Length: 60
Image (cartoon, rainbow, N blue to C red; front, side):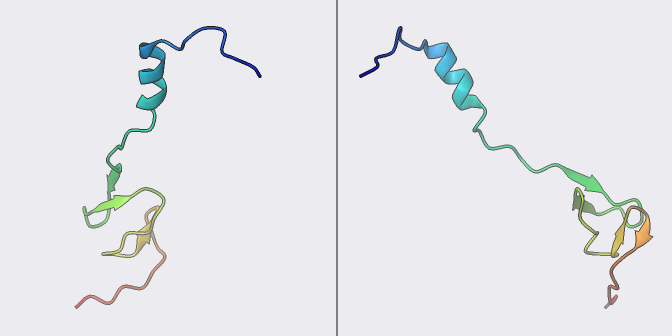
């Protein structure tokens, strides 16, 4: 069986595992209503995407 040539250092292990950490989602501000919206999604409060109306939203 194959065995590793040398032991992986602690620093290399930490660098590799550091890529799996949790990051908060990046939220954009809607140019129409100013609410926080995830990227590439139509605004749930006003229904716009890329400055045009794509979803009809009933204002209650």
